[in-house]
Amino acid sequence: MQNIEELVKAGKATIIDVRTPSEFMGGHVVGSVNIPLQEIPQRLQEFNSMKHIVLCCASGGRSAQATVYLKQHGIDCVNGGSWLDVNCLC
Image 1: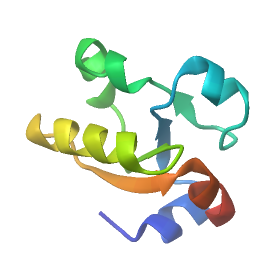
Image 2: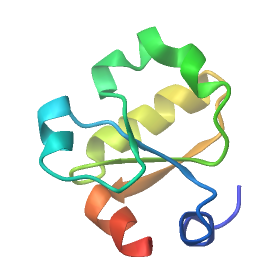
Image 3: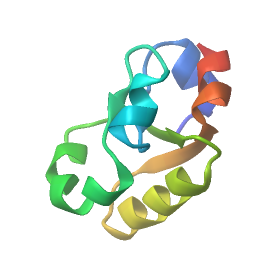
Image 4: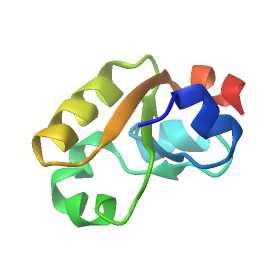
């Protein structure tokens, strides 16, 4: 996968925010999709059609867990860390 910063700046990244819906509603990266960490196993099929997946959350911990899980299921993705850090790349 290309550099996260390049993908985000070019608008080519699919940004997935794994925080809770209430956290997401409190602020998020414009254009990001909210798929809470606990819902990922049930929504795994949704990731198959996505390209250049960048995961984010509040601090990077939950997105790190999501990254490990998705990679174990053959899905190419990267941990972008905090949504605020990813937002700064836009």
